[in-house]
Amino acid sequence: MSGADTGRPAVLVLEDGTTFHGTTFGAAADTFGEMVFNTGMTGYQETLTDPSYCRQIVAMTAPHIGNTGVNDEDPESRRIWVSGFVVREPARLASSWRSQRSVQDELAAQGVTGIAIAGTRALTRHLRDSGAMRAGISATEGDPRELLERVLASPPMTGADLAREVSTPREYVVAPPAGIPVRYRVAAVDLGIKAATPRSMAALGCEVHVLPAAASAADILAINPDGVFFSNGPGDPAAATYAVEAMRGVLAAGLPVFGICFGSQILGRALGLDTYKLRFGHRGVNQPVQDLRTGRVQITSHNHGFAVEMPEEPGAQFPTKFGPAEITHVNLNDGVVEGLRLLDTPAFAVQYHPEAAPGPHDASGLFGEFCELMEGSVAGGRRA
Image (spheres, helix red, strand yellow):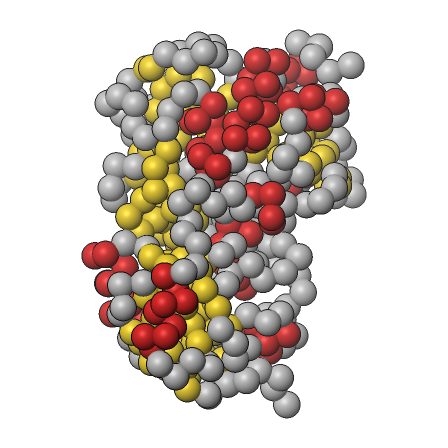
């Protein structure tokens, strides 16, 4: 029998007072967070367990969620991180041979509140027009006006330092699979890293040392790495000053650096650029990104609500403390910065996810590009 508390009346209230009525699935409790939407047609288990969704209520635009259940092989972290989950129609039956339990039971077991509403399309259109905003789900509060007061008292995402909340408390190592020799040692700063990321690097011969978010440049360099990786993660990059300082220390040491998503924003701030909050963010597996150096377009996986400010015209060089840099990628939907690199230092970053769990594999070659930078570092005798 299902352990989920499904079918009870529930209400979703946005901070502008917009209200949606529905029914519970998962835990029947009250929850609050930033209301966002994800356009992926699949990968709901990876979405639920992506640390970048910490303190967010996620609405899935795909109408039917839960068909394949959940299992113990696909989570991207140790737990579900979303504050709440909004779907149009939860699947009544999980039919995949890999399924071990239903998404409803998994939500209930981890105390995560879900709501099924008929108007996920209306909700998504409203967020696109008005922007991401705070929200609350309740199965206990009968008066939406009372819930709205609690929503307005909840913390905003701007200024939130969440990377340290989701990060590993201590270092751990992901080694290459059996039969693949260690070619590079990577220090990966966990700002909210997904499990598929160190696995992707390990498959290329990287011994990945995953470090806590607050690791200093000295902590990172003590590993004597061939390269340093800064991961995705939640919250406002302007609040993660510790990561910016660590990035600057690593850049000053001349080590190869690769950042993705939140890590890209950290590189941008380390280079002196500002970051800002996007209207409704990019979340899904269908974002078109153009490489300005080649003109090639990739369909990419995204999950971010902040972005790096455009310093000049896309592709133009701009000065930094670490030498000239340039914007390398832009989003074709809205022109947002999607990649940048230093020209005299082996450092680059992209705003999207090359591990693509879930998503297309167009960008998987970026891990190989990082390995090429480390190959030059190893050949130069940097590692003892």
